[in-house]
Length: 160
Image 1: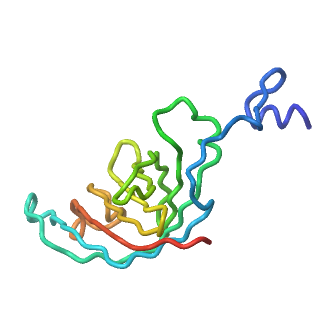
Image 2 (image 1 turned 90 degrees about the horizontal axis):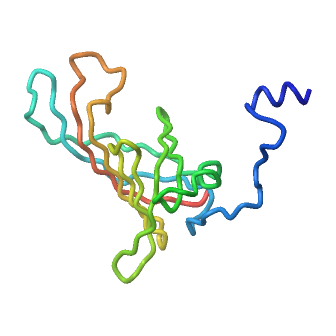
């Protein structure tokens, strides 16, 4: 059994996890459910490239989780922590920096890598602003409905 576990996790012997290592703290709840209030942006259709048209996108709820694995093992980075964003279609890993807003309110500024998604989270009232840019917004869409999109969304999160 020891050999099986060693093979599955890729190491054994003198390599150990320091489960008591200092893990950064993002000063936020471990699990959040976030609900969009409005999502709007621009989209260019394949037949009309480089001519963005205003659109209102369907709002979508998502979940945020503190990624403790990355927080524990990615300590030599310029980031203050890591979040995992989960929605109906995707899982997005976000790198976060602590920021201060108006009135010295604590918040997080998070993006994926390479940056195409951005999440700003006010840690005082759990309001968020989220934006995305790219040609993958409608993954799986047929040619007639594909194109590039830019959207901005705002909403609020609650502790799950």
